[in-house]
Image 1 (cartoon, rainbow, N blue to C red):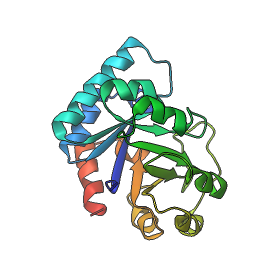
Image 2 (image 1 turned 60 degrees about the vertical axis):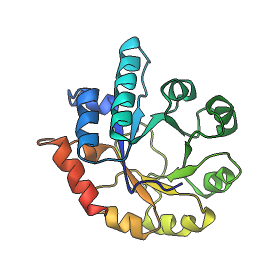
Image 3 (image 1 turned 135 degrees about the vertical axis):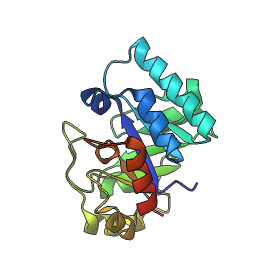
Image 4 (image 1 turned 45 degrees about the vertical axis):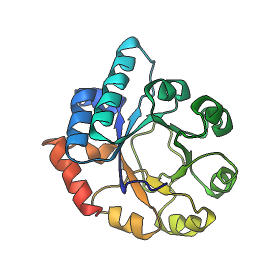
Length: 207
């Protein structure tokens, strides 16, 4: 598969801290031209969260953008989305039984051992990180760094998404080190200003 260079992730926890409505953020990201969007929710799944997921799924469908659900194979299947798994989530082989053979599944890795092991998994793309220090996780894995990213690139022919602490100032270096795409969480939401303008900046940088 070919994955867009700009891979935005809507983290519901971060949006709540910034007092930003999830649907509003999705409309802004997609309206600016994003071709893929991940919904990431680490807390309790309440009925309101499900309503948000359905709304974002519909927006992605209308924008002809790939929708990705983090962690939850059951919910991804219900809304016809792709699935992204972490190392502590449902094993990819089990998720594939839920999702079916045609669904897109991604898997996060953090080091050489995990990246090598992922070659045996039924997944379509891989993520690697954190490339730089990140504040989007409470207990982040050790930083990978650009040199290690460059070394690890040779261990997989699958699309590789870099994640963790990536900003507009260092994104070009990450791509040059071998990443096919960069996943953006924190730098997606400006402290002041428009999400849509920020997304357009990102898309322009990653052309």
